[in-house]
Image (tube, rainbow, N blue to C red; front, side, top):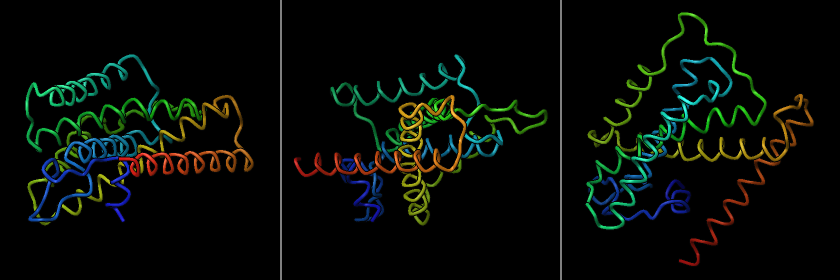
Length: 213
């Protein structure tokens, strides 16, 4: 099941994947890092903010998100142009910091387009960066523990679903103009239907693209 879903968004080349014997993770090393990093960003928001989606998007957050994203893009382009060759561990790490950057940027955008206004973080709330560090260390350590590689596969799969969920929520909120609307059962059903339609469209497009390869 995980392999079938992952095949829609990842090349799944064994030599570029983290493997145990002849069994490889559903996603390549870079994609595993990207989606795991995004999930860590989501969890850090939940554990530290107590908000529905994320803290407001500020210039500082945009800058913090763009730096790891540019690092991931530079690493990927450089390897594609054969300027250097990265190991799977390096691909995982660059993907992970890129995924963190995506989360830092996408979650506030999602909250903005859905009309969510984050309340101030209460005094004494847990700071976000230590949680980032703890969760990141925990996830990245999984690659060195063969018995826990299935856990890493699940983490990356949850991150894959999360990133498309929040992306589709942001798109739905922007298209439906929910930023300035009050929520009621009809609005929630409309939002749910639009998100499901986007998922169906993405699944169809990815499937068609895969069939033509």
